[in-house]
Length: 125
Figure 1 (cartoon, one colour):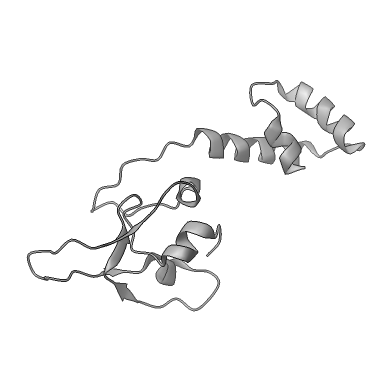
Figure 2 (cartoon, helix red, strand yellow; figure 1 turned 120 degrees about the horizontal axis):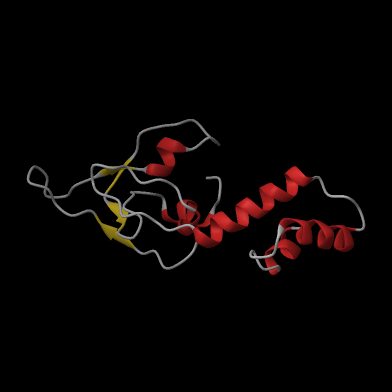
């Protein structure tokens, strides 16, 4: 269902989308489900990432799963030569026990200190 909706233009009107979905699936789609799918597609297509300052924590955006992200070491601070940040994945995961883990590596694009593979490839880490 998701692939067929994403191939349609988002600029089509809702009645046309409902009609096309009836033809494609041969059954009535719940309008709420269709609206959620349209909203999700619009969100992923038109989301613009906001610039994050060091005092404003980064929010997870769908764009973290796309693009080129490379690990780099955290810049030194006045107090520490080898600065560390709290791992975003370890602290915010709903899949396992939350724990504090510090790391020297961060993503310059996202401004978070993650486990790179988990943060940039999994929707729900």
